[in-house]
Amino acid sequence: VKVGLDVFLAEHLSLLEGKRAGIITNQSGIASSGEHIVDILSSIEGVSIGALYAPEHGIRGDLPDATKMVSYVDKRTGIQVWSLYGEHLKPTQKMLEDVDVLIYDIQDVGARFYTFISTMGLAMEAASEFGKQFIVLDRPNPINGVIIEGPIIEEEHFSFVGQYPIPVRYGMTPGEMARMIKGEEWMGGMEKLDMKVIPMEGWQRTMWYDQTGLPWIKPSPNIPSVLT
Image (cartoon, rainbow, N blue to C red):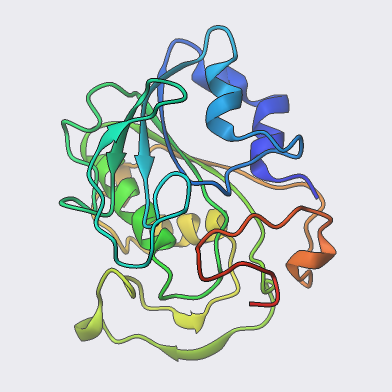
């Protein structure tokens, strides 16, 4: 299986020509080479990274649940890191002033109450509001894309741990979820959002993560293994 990042690097780098990229990611955003998306893109001549955006648990994934983060400068690259799990859950105009395109690359968990897909939707809404292109680099649903379980949350109970009318176990990849958020207009401004999903190669819906041949990088401190 090749994740969306691998496909993007091989075939779609032209999307960043003349643009400043903002990257929404954490420690799970790695290519098949084992290198992190930020390290790869920041080393490519002609690619400009304007800012990084940290979801819950931070860019390195080492913060406990519900730990509010402040924005800071990444020591390794010197790039501004904006927190999307602190004072703001949605990127503001100031956070986006140095980028033209937002790239989302996070390994999902497949359960509704993990906040990565909520961060993605709010970032999609902000991208539409402030005229930024939005690119999703797809990754597997680790608990497969066939089995769907649990009740659908009712709108009166929507929150950051349940932002869409989906079951607890929703059987979609981040790219598929992004397409559904846009198509169903679950967030504001979706009709004018300029979005592109970079699909995986070789992934099949019936696959559990340990059948993909990909290394497991825990997306959250509480998901240390595929078994979890």
